[in-house]
Image 1 (cartoon, rainbow, N blue to C red):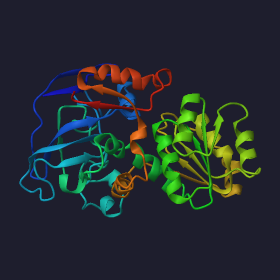
Image 2: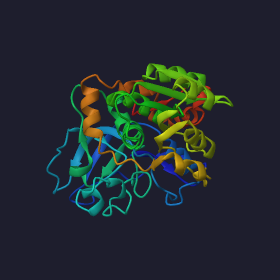
Image 3: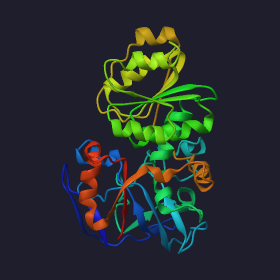
Image 4: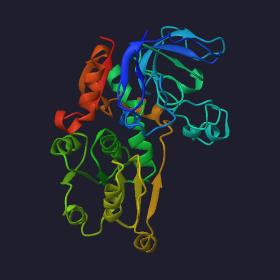
Length: 348
Protein backbone atom coordinates (compact mmCIF):
# COMPACT_ATOMS: atom_id res chain seq x y z
CA UNK A 1 0.00 0.00 0.00
CA UNK A 2 0.99 3.65 -0.22
CA UNK A 3 1.24 6.11 2.67
CA UNK A 4 2.68 9.49 3.63
CA UNK A 5 5.85 8.72 5.59
CA UNK A 6 7.77 11.09 7.88
CA UNK A 7 11.54 11.08 7.45
CA UNK A 8 12.50 14.00 9.67
CA UNK A 9 11.83 17.76 9.80
CA UNK A 10 10.51 19.08 6.47
CA UNK A 11 10.90 15.62 4.94
CA UNK A 12 7.89 13.49 4.02
CA UNK A 13 7.18 11.14 1.13
CA UNK A 14 4.15 9.37 -0.43
CA UNK A 15 5.67 5.92 -0.87
CA UNK A 16 5.16 2.17 -0.81
CA UNK A 17 5.02 0.63 2.68
CA UNK A 18 4.03 -2.79 4.07
CA UNK A 19 0.28 -3.40 4.10
CA UNK A 20 -1.59 -2.60 7.31
CA UNK A 21 -2.59 -5.83 9.04
CA UNK A 22 -4.26 -7.07 12.21
CA UNK A 23 -1.59 -7.54 14.90
CA UNK A 24 -3.75 -8.01 18.00
CA UNK A 25 -7.18 -9.66 18.44
CA UNK A 26 -8.73 -6.25 19.23
CA UNK A 27 -7.49 -4.68 15.96
CA UNK A 28 -9.28 -3.97 12.72
CA UNK A 29 -7.90 -2.72 9.41
CA UNK A 30 -9.73 0.17 7.77
CA UNK A 31 -9.51 1.21 4.13
CA UNK A 32 -9.14 4.99 4.25
CA UNK A 33 -11.84 6.63 2.13
CA UNK A 34 -11.31 10.18 3.45
CA UNK A 35 -8.64 11.85 5.55
CA UNK A 36 -7.44 15.37 6.31
CA UNK A 37 -4.50 17.35 7.69
CA UNK A 38 -4.27 18.84 11.17
CA UNK A 39 -2.13 21.66 12.52
CA UNK A 40 -0.41 19.01 14.65
CA UNK A 41 0.89 17.41 11.45
CA UNK A 42 2.57 20.71 10.61
CA UNK A 43 4.15 20.78 14.10
CA UNK A 44 5.51 17.27 13.47
CA UNK A 45 7.03 18.35 10.17
CA UNK A 46 8.70 21.26 11.94
CA UNK A 47 10.38 18.75 14.25
CA UNK A 48 8.34 19.84 17.28
CA UNK A 49 7.21 16.32 18.27
CA UNK A 50 10.31 14.20 19.00
CA UNK A 51 8.22 11.08 19.68
CA UNK A 52 7.49 10.94 15.94
CA UNK A 53 10.45 9.17 14.38
CA UNK A 54 11.74 8.41 10.90
CA UNK A 55 9.45 5.98 9.09
CA UNK A 56 6.21 6.89 10.87
CA UNK A 57 3.08 7.19 8.70
CA UNK A 58 1.44 10.56 9.39
CA UNK A 59 -2.19 11.48 10.11
CA UNK A 60 -4.73 10.87 12.86
CA UNK A 61 -8.16 11.39 11.26
CA UNK A 62 -10.06 9.13 8.87
CA UNK A 63 -13.38 7.89 7.60
CA UNK A 64 -13.24 4.51 5.96
CA UNK A 65 -14.43 0.95 5.51
CA UNK A 66 -13.48 -2.00 7.69
CA UNK A 67 -11.65 -4.64 5.63
CA UNK A 68 -10.20 -7.01 8.25
CA UNK A 69 -11.34 -7.80 11.80
CA UNK A 70 -9.42 -9.26 14.74
CA UNK A 71 -10.75 -12.33 16.54
CA UNK A 72 -11.81 -10.40 19.67
CA UNK A 73 -13.70 -7.62 17.87
CA UNK A 74 -17.45 -7.84 18.38
CA UNK A 75 -18.86 -4.45 17.41
CA UNK A 76 -17.63 -4.16 13.82
CA UNK A 77 -17.51 -6.33 10.71
CA UNK A 78 -15.89 -6.15 7.30
CA UNK A 79 -17.78 -3.65 5.15
CA UNK A 80 -18.79 -1.35 8.02
CA UNK A 81 -18.34 2.38 7.42
CA UNK A 82 -16.54 3.93 10.36
CA UNK A 83 -15.04 7.10 11.78
CA UNK A 84 -11.47 6.72 13.03
CA UNK A 85 -11.02 9.45 15.68
CA UNK A 86 -7.81 11.14 16.78
CA UNK A 87 -8.01 9.45 20.20
CA UNK A 88 -7.70 5.70 20.75
CA UNK A 89 -9.01 4.24 24.00
CA UNK A 90 -8.97 0.87 25.72
CA UNK A 91 -12.12 1.74 27.69
CA UNK A 92 -10.86 0.04 30.86
CA UNK A 93 -7.95 1.98 32.37
CA UNK A 94 -8.33 4.62 35.06
CA UNK A 95 -8.38 7.55 32.66
CA UNK A 96 -10.79 5.94 30.21
CA UNK A 97 -13.12 5.20 33.13
CA UNK A 98 -12.89 8.86 34.16
CA UNK A 99 -13.90 9.97 30.68
CA UNK A 100 -10.34 11.09 29.85
CA UNK A 101 -9.22 8.69 27.11
CA UNK A 102 -6.79 11.36 25.94
CA UNK A 103 -4.56 9.86 28.65
CA UNK A 104 -5.38 6.18 28.11
CA UNK A 105 -2.69 4.28 30.00
CA UNK A 106 -3.07 1.10 27.97
CA UNK A 107 -2.09 2.69 24.65
CA UNK A 108 0.90 4.54 26.09
CA UNK A 109 -0.37 7.25 28.45
CA UNK A 110 -1.75 9.41 25.66
CA UNK A 111 -4.76 8.60 23.49
CA UNK A 112 -3.31 10.34 20.45
CA UNK A 113 -1.29 7.50 18.97
CA UNK A 114 -2.04 7.62 15.21
CA UNK A 115 0.76 9.37 13.34
CA UNK A 116 2.50 9.76 16.69
CA UNK A 117 3.26 6.48 18.45
CA UNK A 118 1.91 4.16 15.72
CA UNK A 119 1.33 4.49 11.98
CA UNK A 120 -1.41 6.91 11.03
CA UNK A 121 -4.26 7.55 8.66
CA UNK A 122 -2.71 9.41 5.72
CA UNK A 123 -2.48 6.08 3.95
CA UNK A 124 -4.54 3.71 1.84
CA UNK A 125 -5.15 1.49 4.89
CA UNK A 126 -4.70 1.87 8.64
CA UNK A 127 -4.56 -0.58 11.57
CA UNK A 128 -6.89 0.51 14.39
CA UNK A 129 -6.20 -0.90 17.89
CA UNK A 130 -9.02 -1.35 20.41
CA UNK A 131 -11.56 -1.06 17.64
CA UNK A 132 -14.63 -1.83 19.74
CA UNK A 133 -13.99 1.08 22.11
CA UNK A 134 -12.39 3.50 19.66
CA UNK A 135 -14.30 3.41 16.36
CA UNK A 136 -17.68 4.98 15.62
CA UNK A 137 -20.20 3.73 13.07
CA UNK A 138 -21.08 6.47 10.58
CA UNK A 139 -24.87 6.86 10.07
CA UNK A 140 -26.12 6.41 6.51
CA UNK A 141 -27.24 10.03 6.28
CA UNK A 142 -23.82 11.45 7.16
CA UNK A 143 -21.35 11.92 4.30
CA UNK A 144 -17.64 11.19 4.55
CA UNK A 145 -16.92 14.91 4.20
CA UNK A 146 -19.15 15.66 7.17
CA UNK A 147 -17.84 12.83 9.32
CA UNK A 148 -14.13 13.49 8.79
CA UNK A 149 -14.24 16.73 10.78
CA UNK A 150 -15.68 14.86 13.77
CA UNK A 151 -12.39 12.96 14.09
CA UNK A 152 -10.62 15.91 15.70
CA UNK A 153 -11.52 19.53 14.80
CA UNK A 154 -15.16 19.64 15.88
CA UNK A 155 -14.70 17.67 19.13
CA UNK A 156 -11.69 19.82 20.00
CA UNK A 157 -13.54 23.10 19.51
CA UNK A 158 -16.56 21.77 21.37
CA UNK A 159 -14.91 19.91 24.27
CA UNK A 160 -11.81 22.01 24.95
CA UNK A 161 -13.51 25.29 24.04
CA UNK A 162 -17.27 25.32 24.60
CA UNK A 163 -17.65 22.63 27.27
CA UNK A 164 -14.47 23.42 29.21
CA UNK A 165 -15.34 27.11 28.99
CA UNK A 166 -18.69 26.29 30.59
CA UNK A 167 -20.68 28.25 27.98
CA UNK A 168 -24.27 28.66 29.13
CA UNK A 169 -27.49 30.23 27.77
CA UNK A 170 -27.16 33.99 27.45
CA UNK A 171 -23.37 34.03 27.71
CA UNK A 172 -21.18 36.27 25.62
CA UNK A 173 -18.25 34.47 24.01
CA UNK A 174 -15.12 35.63 22.19
CA UNK A 175 -13.22 33.15 20.02
CA UNK A 176 -9.66 34.34 19.44
CA UNK A 177 -8.49 32.66 16.24
CA UNK A 178 -10.98 31.71 13.53
CA UNK A 179 -9.09 28.83 11.99
CA UNK A 180 -10.65 25.38 11.73
CA UNK A 181 -10.73 24.64 15.47
CA UNK A 182 -11.80 28.18 16.38
CA UNK A 183 -14.62 27.94 13.85
CA UNK A 184 -15.59 24.57 15.34
CA UNK A 185 -15.99 26.38 18.66
CA UNK A 186 -18.05 29.10 16.97
CA UNK A 187 -20.20 26.46 15.29
CA UNK A 188 -20.99 24.65 18.55
CA UNK A 189 -21.49 27.61 20.94
CA UNK A 190 -25.06 27.75 19.69
CA UNK A 191 -25.75 24.31 21.21
CA UNK A 192 -25.47 25.98 24.63
CA UNK A 193 -27.39 29.14 23.79
CA UNK A 194 -24.67 31.77 23.72
CA UNK A 195 -26.30 35.15 23.06
CA UNK A 196 -23.28 36.78 21.42
CA UNK A 197 -20.30 35.11 19.76
CA UNK A 198 -17.46 37.42 18.72
CA UNK A 199 -14.81 36.04 16.35
CA UNK A 200 -11.38 37.69 16.54
CA UNK A 201 -8.81 37.15 13.79
CA UNK A 202 -6.40 39.06 11.56
CA UNK A 203 -7.65 37.29 8.43
CA UNK A 204 -10.70 38.84 6.77
CA UNK A 205 -11.62 35.60 4.95
CA UNK A 206 -11.77 33.74 8.25
CA UNK A 207 -13.89 36.48 9.79
CA UNK A 208 -16.33 36.19 6.89
CA UNK A 209 -16.44 32.44 7.44
CA UNK A 210 -17.05 33.00 11.16
CA UNK A 211 -20.31 34.77 10.37
CA UNK A 212 -21.34 31.80 8.20
CA UNK A 213 -20.51 29.50 11.12
CA UNK A 214 -22.72 31.42 13.54
CA UNK A 215 -20.69 34.32 14.95
CA UNK A 216 -22.83 37.37 15.72
CA UNK A 217 -19.91 39.80 15.46
CA UNK A 218 -16.34 39.93 14.20
CA UNK A 219 -13.35 41.99 15.28
CA UNK A 220 -10.19 42.29 13.21
CA UNK A 221 -7.22 41.65 15.48
CA UNK A 222 -5.10 44.71 16.18
CA UNK A 223 -4.34 47.41 18.74
CA UNK A 224 -8.05 48.10 19.28
CA UNK A 225 -9.19 44.50 19.80
CA UNK A 226 -9.85 44.72 23.54
CA UNK A 227 -11.62 48.06 23.22
CA UNK A 228 -13.89 46.80 20.41
CA UNK A 229 -14.84 43.58 22.19
CA UNK A 230 -15.48 45.46 25.43
CA UNK A 231 -17.76 47.86 23.56
CA UNK A 232 -19.73 44.93 22.13
CA UNK A 233 -20.34 43.63 25.67
CA UNK A 234 -21.61 46.81 27.32
CA UNK A 235 -18.18 47.52 28.74
CA UNK A 236 -18.09 44.28 30.73
CA UNK A 237 -15.98 41.88 28.66
CA UNK A 238 -17.08 38.38 27.68
CA UNK A 239 -18.20 35.53 29.91
CA UNK A 240 -15.98 33.08 28.04
CA UNK A 241 -12.87 33.77 25.96
CA UNK A 242 -11.77 30.82 23.83
CA UNK A 243 -8.15 30.90 22.63
CA UNK A 244 -7.67 28.85 19.46
CA UNK A 245 -4.26 29.87 18.10
CA UNK A 246 -1.47 28.86 20.48
CA UNK A 247 0.66 32.01 20.66
CA UNK A 248 1.52 33.93 23.84
CA UNK A 249 -0.02 37.13 22.46
CA UNK A 250 -3.33 35.45 21.61
CA UNK A 251 -3.66 33.91 25.07
CA UNK A 252 -2.92 37.31 26.59
CA UNK A 253 -5.59 38.82 24.33
CA UNK A 254 -8.10 36.23 25.53
CA UNK A 255 -7.18 37.04 29.14
CA UNK A 256 -7.78 40.73 28.48
CA UNK A 257 -11.24 40.11 26.99
CA UNK A 258 -12.83 38.14 29.83
CA UNK A 259 -14.92 39.79 32.54
CA UNK A 260 -14.62 39.17 36.30
CA UNK A 261 -15.89 35.68 37.11
CA UNK A 262 -15.36 34.58 33.52
CA UNK A 263 -13.45 31.71 31.93
CA UNK A 264 -10.53 31.50 29.51
CA UNK A 265 -10.68 28.20 27.60
CA UNK A 266 -7.32 27.56 25.95
CA UNK A 267 -7.48 25.28 22.92
CA UNK A 268 -4.31 26.43 21.15
CA UNK A 269 -1.21 24.24 21.17
CA UNK A 270 1.49 26.35 22.81
CA UNK A 271 5.11 25.65 21.95
CA UNK A 272 6.73 28.20 24.27
CA UNK A 273 6.04 29.45 27.83
CA UNK A 274 3.45 32.18 28.36
CA UNK A 275 3.72 34.76 31.12
CA UNK A 276 0.19 35.51 32.36
CA UNK A 277 -0.81 38.58 34.44
CA UNK A 278 -1.72 36.51 37.48
CA UNK A 279 -1.52 39.62 39.66
CA UNK A 280 -4.61 40.88 37.80
CA UNK A 281 -6.39 37.60 37.08
CA UNK A 282 -6.65 36.20 40.61
CA UNK A 283 -8.56 39.13 42.01
CA UNK A 284 -10.97 39.02 39.06
CA UNK A 285 -11.91 35.39 39.81
CA UNK A 286 -10.80 34.20 36.39
CA UNK A 287 -10.83 30.49 35.54
CA UNK A 288 -8.30 29.14 33.02
CA UNK A 289 -8.85 25.74 31.40
CA UNK A 290 -6.80 23.79 28.87
CA UNK A 291 -6.36 20.25 27.63
CA UNK A 292 -6.14 17.62 24.94
CA UNK A 293 -9.40 16.56 23.30
CA UNK A 294 -10.99 13.31 24.53
CA UNK A 295 -13.40 12.91 21.57
CA UNK A 296 -16.07 11.62 23.97
CA UNK A 297 -18.52 14.08 22.39
CA UNK A 298 -18.44 12.32 19.01
CA UNK A 299 -21.74 10.42 19.49
CA UNK A 300 -23.51 13.68 20.34
CA UNK A 301 -21.92 15.54 17.44
CA UNK A 302 -22.69 12.71 15.01
CA UNK A 303 -26.34 12.90 16.02
CA UNK A 304 -26.39 16.67 15.57
CA UNK A 305 -24.76 16.37 12.14
CA UNK A 306 -27.16 13.61 11.07
CA UNK A 307 -30.11 15.77 12.13
CA UNK A 308 -28.84 18.80 10.25
CA UNK A 309 -28.07 20.86 13.37
CA UNK A 310 -24.34 21.08 12.66
CA UNK A 311 -23.26 21.67 9.02
CA UNK A 312 -19.86 20.02 9.50
CA UNK A 313 -19.17 19.98 5.76
CA UNK A 314 -18.57 23.75 5.89
CA UNK A 315 -15.17 23.01 7.40
CA UNK A 316 -13.82 21.66 4.11
CA UNK A 317 -12.70 24.27 1.59
CA UNK A 318 -10.30 22.30 -0.65
CA UNK A 319 -10.29 18.73 -1.99
CA UNK A 320 -7.34 16.60 -3.11
CA UNK A 321 -6.54 13.02 -4.03
CA UNK A 322 -3.78 10.97 -2.43
CA UNK A 323 -1.47 11.54 -5.38
CA UNK A 324 -1.71 15.30 -4.70
CA UNK A 325 -1.12 15.10 -0.96
CA UNK A 326 1.98 17.31 -1.15
CA UNK A 327 -0.15 20.03 -2.72
CA UNK A 328 -2.75 19.53 0.03
CA UNK A 329 -0.05 20.14 2.64
CA UNK A 330 1.14 23.26 0.82
CA UNK A 331 -2.39 24.70 0.73
CA UNK A 332 -3.04 23.87 4.37
CA UNK A 333 0.32 25.24 5.52
CA UNK A 334 -0.36 28.49 3.64
CA UNK A 335 -4.04 28.63 4.53
CA UNK A 336 -4.36 32.41 4.53
CA UNK A 337 -2.96 32.75 1.01
CA UNK A 338 -5.27 30.01 -0.30
CA UNK A 339 -8.35 30.97 1.77
CA UNK A 340 -8.31 27.46 3.21
CA UNK A 341 -9.81 26.02 6.39
CA UNK A 342 -9.56 22.23 6.19
CA UNK A 343 -8.60 20.04 3.24
CA UNK A 344 -10.41 16.84 2.26
CA UNK A 345 -8.18 14.06 0.91
CA UNK A 346 -9.57 10.96 -0.83
CA UNK A 347 -8.05 8.04 -2.79
CA UNK A 348 -9.18 9.44 -6.14
